[in-house]
Image (cartoon, rainbow, N blue to C red; front, top):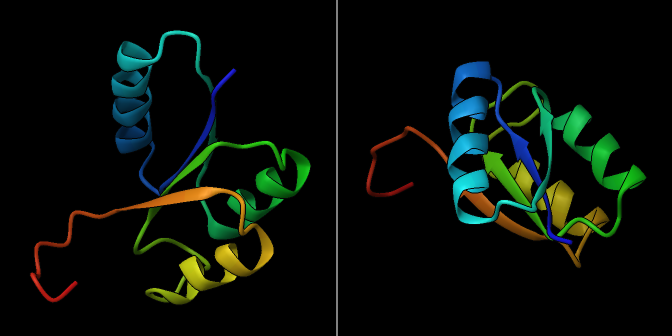
Length: 90
């Protein structure tokens, strides 16, 4: 079964992403995290997670440092960055 963690500090955005994911993968197991520490804790408890949808800017994360810390601790988990930032350099 596919397991995905949605890590974003905005609850409405997390819910919208969760709804979109459920439409694509109805049998998905979803978890939500409002902070980077919560996402790390969830990944530690569930190392079989398939995908982390990680907000670029959220509490506990400083730009790409949050991504780097996740990749170091959980290299087997796929990570997709999500952000409302529209800067092409990002």
